[in-house]
Length: 404
Image 1 (cartoon, one colour):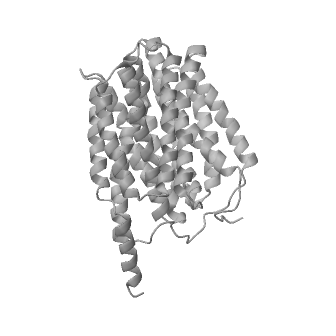
Image 2 (cartoon, rainbow, N blue to C red):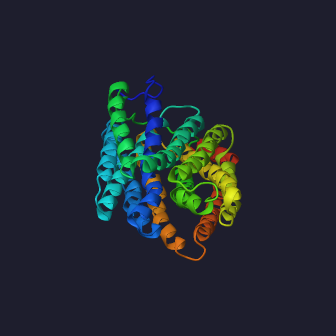
Image 3 (cartoon, rainbow, N blue to C red):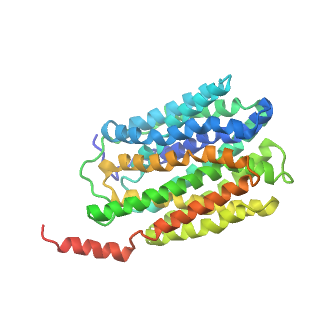
């Protein structure tokens, strides 16, 4: 059966949303578990956190080959590989007996996790007219994965130790893989020659759009990764008057992520109604002061600032994918998304050593948030050059008036 956008496959989108949840959940098990692991092994947080570096590098680096395989082999089969692979990698990591085995296991988790974004998002944006709405709800599920990771990991660590935090989601991923193969029909090969969903642009305008996208992606990727990796430890240090247990930290992080996740639904609706340039600028403008506030607050004030900050951070995510969905034809979309996520997740891998290094300084996490505020400034500068709707309309009219 050939791939035809719009053909009903009622279980496809739910499983793509579930995959997004599991993808982010798996990647953030360790940043929560490491708080307890540091106490159990009597080693500093700044020494153990870098064990996750290989996983975050793989999370970005394997996005391009995953996208290429999806476009040339099968997006459906790559999603099956994702579910099975990430589940098996989580189970294997749970059996780790040493630091290097943990690092290896986390790297393999990152390699399989890299499949989701170029493949799952490409399948998701292949057909819908309201691309923002679909991306917004998918983003909500991804952010719920962040929230559930902190909550589930904190609960499992307190109840059964850090290994259970890998075993339980690993088994769930395996069960999800089996259900995916049983319930979701293969939509077939990628449709060739399909047009993009947005205005037609020439090579020069396309290069401008994607150059801006890559700058915003790089800055936003570091901000997203840094805030989500650091949050459990930030709360452990700055909210001790509210909770002193792993589960308590997990509950607070989960509450912030769950409420902030709805920013993606709102942003998805705005994408379908508002020009992308205004939204890109608005998100960057919101992030700068909120990251600065997070650098300087404690207790309840920090909790409130963290919520507002994550609303702005999460709200940016569907914007970048909407740009690819609007200006890239379906047959190339997985590869283009692969490049985007290599930049986003690959560059974002610097978050791990950056947090570890800055956490040892006198300013601690305050310095981390100040660096992130500066990166938000870079994202704002890039967004100012994104073409407006009027400019794109004039560009289309100019192209249509030229002789064939």
